[in-house]
Length: 119
Length: 107
Image 1 (cartoon, chains in turn green, purple):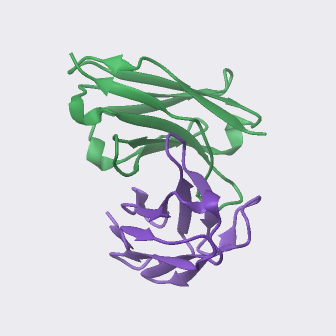
Image 2 (image 1 turned 90 degrees about the vertical axis):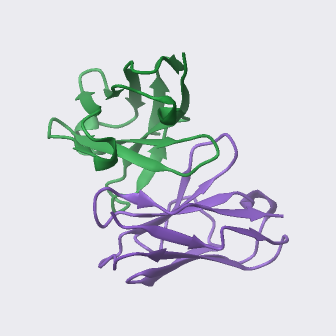
């Protein structure tokens, strides 16, 4: 059974960097695409970006150059960094897997972690 | 970006009803690159349908998907109490992969 778990600070100050880690169990990280998605309170879903093994990640242009996704397959983890955060970055952040058999759709998700941007 | 517009934004229904939710894309999605998710309060979304009409493992057969080009549907044939939730479509044709705004299915 594939499981994903997000971890990181729940409160970040404006202009600082949001850092989250997703720990994966039950799957080889080298064979799937790993994705970050966020959902502001009461709003819809926004894909942040994804990474596959050590290939170059793909990022949503809406986040510009603020986002970095990295992977450490030896630790079964991938990470998200979002710089220069503002209150608009307050959201539940999810990590998820693109299923190899589900046509790029996200078949396993973490439970999500709320990150609040506030001073 | 490809915009996805779901309709209705919310719908009220009863147990046993048949419900259809529509997802319209701003550009043709070409192949079968559309998925549907269900989200319950405080939970992560759950994949229901991928590739327009393929049922994800473990999802009840009362859920079905269809459509092509720019117009897609999610149908729940006989509503059960556990189906009341928010439903999202997602296109995976062109990056950035985008989601519809969601449809709330209420009792």
